[in-house]
Image (cartoon, rainbow, N blue to C red; front, side):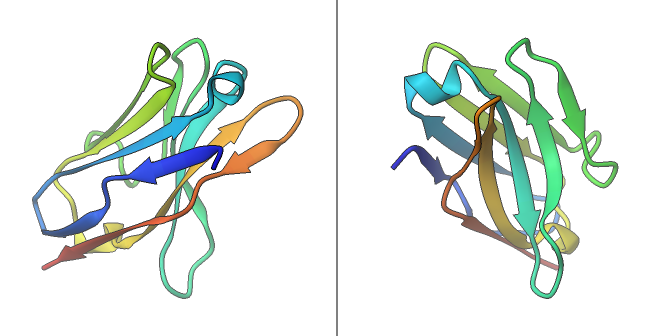
Length: 114
């Protein structure tokens, strides 16, 4: 497994969850990392991404609530999700993107109940 995601689960609205994704060193060091999500009946969409240099980008819907970070020593990218809303319910996917190809992790389900 090249990308291993963890941390999904169920939470009530207003709660928090943290997703983590660990990649092999050879992939992580060369890649921008991101989190995408796909809700039932909807297309996969960008949630947040972070470059190798630490620049970040967020979907408007999560700005101010989610924080993406990367630990280059542990080859791990983390998505801290606060103030969760029912609309955040989706399967979340980790992505490693570099010059050669994209690598997708297995999805992890986040369910937010009202």
